[in-house]
Image 1 (cartoon, protein in one colour):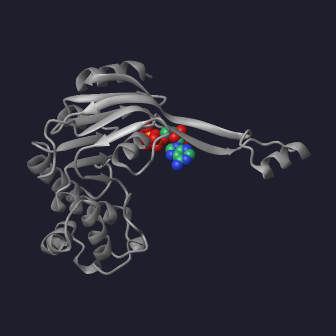
Image 2 (cartoon, helix red, strand yellow):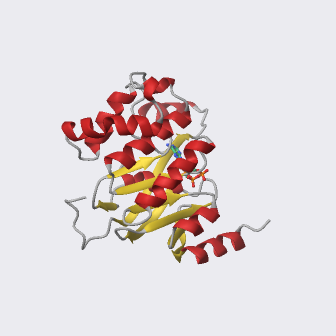
Image 3 (cartoon, rainbow, N blue to C red):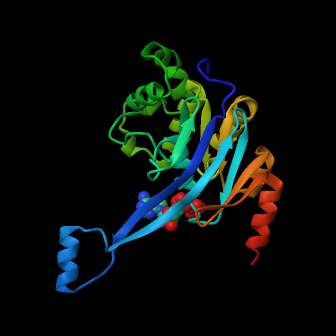
Length: 251
Ligand SMILES: Nc1ncnc2c1ncn2[C@@H]1O[C@H](COP(=O)(O)OP(=O)(O)OP(=O)(O)O)[C@@H](O)[C@H]1O
């Protein structure tokens, strides 16, 4: 945490978009097939999952992101964490190390738990010696003592979640992205994760929380972003964001 410039926001986004190329449109004509082979791009179907978004998150903020399925929440979080590069023209500034917490993003499935701890720890700015010091703590907290040298491709999604949560907590990421972290893992680990999050994260560090659990957003976040079709429908007080979301999505 020493190298953070406290006068700057934790994360700042300017005109950020993300376009996915979905598939080639079907065109059975000879001309269409030739165009596809030549790859002139005209037949590509595009989806703008995140559409021209600008906002900042202050250091120490607990910030929520809500929205219906497919509204662009995970894509936005991946851009914010650096896992996705935004479209040309968009700008993302991060002030501090970050860790994206959902099923193994940032983890290499071909590596063992031990190797992933060293890779992720380095990505969080720790020196090898510093990782050595927290290594046992990470494994113990994740309850993975028996699987230290197993490749994580053989892990269940809950085990990967536990490992990634434990690395972030024990290696001290400055910014923590929690993407549906309350939905995965067994009840015992979830309770432990929530406890440590409440003790060491909610107060002080920057947390960006994506969840369909509106009660958790209400409980932990002051400010929230309501995303609708990749755009900001509302940004401000979390309770207001939730009210608006509920109004929009009444059945
Ligand atoms: N790698 C990808 N390639 C193509 N399309 C994608 C990719 N990732 C996401 N999308 C599309 O972008 C849109 C937004 O997806 P995203 O996962 O960000 O939504 P979300 O709000 O997190 O949804 P959910 O609540 O279901 O998790 C969806 O239409 C999805 O199909």
